[in-house]
Length: 113
Length: 114
Image (cartoon, rainbow over all chains, first blue to last red; front, side, top):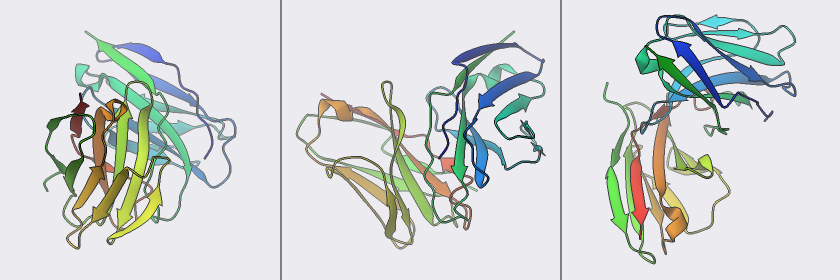
């Protein structure tokens, strides 16, 4: 699975959009980009994933560059409850046959009032 | 639907003892994965079970083992505990055919080895 690079920490004002970048310059054609987050002392929470098209769900949007070497997770209106460590994970989609994830150090997002 | 449940939530053991942790996946989920989280190493994959069979294993010593029952509930066991085994142990389950995509994590079991 390709390696990802994320900034160790970011701040965001409450109510503003939080844009979390992820670099995955060695991503291969069959690798997906996944985002999870972990709020302090809780288990990680799945947010969103995508291959090459931009994706949106009720939690966030995922923007993947055309060359797929980087992506941005967007939380449109950050709240204090979005303060968490955000993990960008790149991995092959095994078609639902393998369930392990490789977590890096992630980005600690602090949403401030 | 109830989420992934893990018991116990907190545990204190002595070096050399063994411990068993339990995980009940979300109803209908047949895949269960286990992870260890420590401040130094972060989140590391331990093993994955699907239909009572271990499908995948991380790079951990043989002291770490697991199993899955016919109702998809899973247990992990650590024998001959070491101080370095102190960690948050997380269990995750996945919906059918989405094991590699969406994982739903439990709250974890905080194990302290003294």
